[in-house]
Length: 259
Image 1 (cartoon, helix red, strand yellow):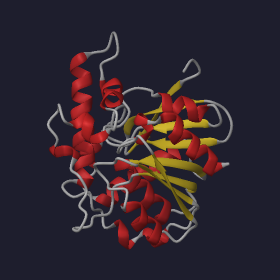
Image 2 (cartoon, rainbow, N blue to C red):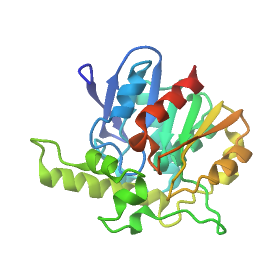
Image 3 (cartoon, rainbow, N blue to C red):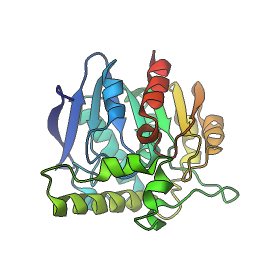
Image 4 (tube, rainbow, N blue to C red):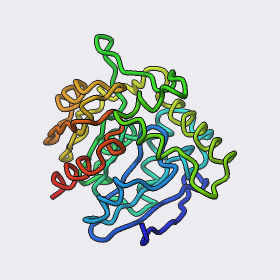
């Protein structure tokens, strides 16, 4: 992480953090539930092959302005604007979990923005016969196990770093939960099924085998709806946030897909 650069962009006139590390063609990453309060090993692995660019969306760690986004369209446009401002227009994009629902819409509505798309257990669909889990309903002691097959991976990411401000850290975590809930709660259904056919980019669907939030069977629903060439990879030993549970395996699958 020695080469990590930290910048700031404006999304709806509010500051959002951007991390950059590595070299090579740009690769964007939009984090899943909880955002990214700190850098993680998964990003180091990607940065061995690509220039990894990680913009924070409004309300997630490093980003402000979520209270100004009142509709799903507001969130999609903000995601589009964040990608453009971060220099990711026309680049490959990896998006996970809550951000995956937004990235899928951006890829479909603004096809020139995303070259190739990786969706890691995205929200956006809902099936009464196999309902998604509700991460907002989890009590704090149960949340790590609901999100990760290795609860310690979530704990490591969300533990206050040495020298950090405990109050600001806590507020940032609460704000991230609220931001995601503004466009997904209670069912995580953004009616994305109606728009999946707009996605024509090559797409990789990546799922943790033990995902307790978005059942792995949802990969088939996404694959059936997306118009572009689509493949699916399942990561053993991983839960909803596979990039925390199995950073090496998740990064390897993504880099293999991107070539």
